[in-house]
Length: 149
Image (cartoon, rainbow, N blue to C red; front, side, top):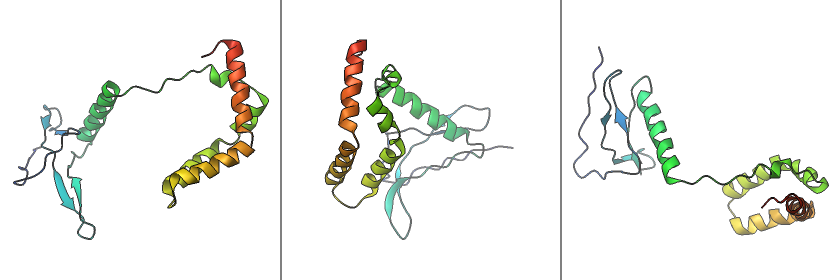
C-alpha cells in the first residue's frame, strides 16, 4: 500500500519559484509541492531547498525532465559549425594534442585562489608560445578558402 503525506511549509517560509517539484504515488497524478528555503547543517548553517523524492526516483526524474524542457525553452544553444572540425592544418594538429591540458588549465583557474584574469593571461601566454596564434591563422585562412563563415 502506498500513501503520500505532504506537510505544510513552516510559517514565514520563503518560497522558491526557480524550479518546480512534484510528487505522486506510483500510477497516480502528480501533485506540485511548495518549494521553500530552509536552514540546514548545524555546523555550517546556510539556506537550502528541502525536498524528498519517492523511492523509485520518479519525482526526481520528472524534475530533471521538466528542468531540461525549461532550459530548452529559455536558452539558446551555442551555434556549432561542424565544418571547422574537418579542417586539418599542421599547426592545428599540434594544438589538438593540448585538449587535456586546456581542460586542466580551466579547472586550475576555477579552483585557484589568485586573480582568475591574471591566471588566465599567464596560461594564454603559454599557449601562444605553443603556436596557438598560428593555428588560428591557418584555420581561418582555410575556412575562408572553403567559404565557411
